[in-house]
Length: 83
Image 1 (tube, rainbow, N blue to C red):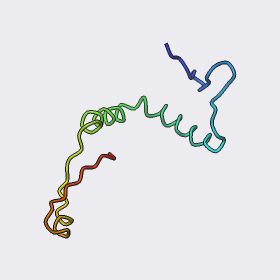
Image 2 (tube, rainbow, N blue to C red):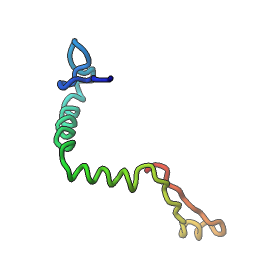
Image 3 (cartoon, rainbow, N blue to C red):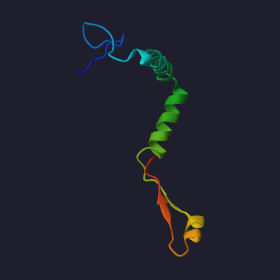
Image 4 (cartoon, helix red, strand yellow):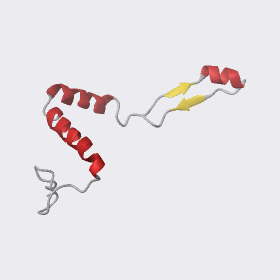
């Protein structure tokens, strides 16, 4: 069973996280936001909706009509893989 980090964010008996000092404030904000939102039913519902309808689904193919016309002849289709 994996039980690290503990409730204080520590990995073992010697203390806290190993992270650049410039990131400490941002990680503290992230920790606080996570604690707040993990118990929010509205956030949970939205998250589950995104997982069901968006994450991992195939992205649609888009017909780039104006680009096709500009290039003259070939029909250009784009598929976004960055989403």
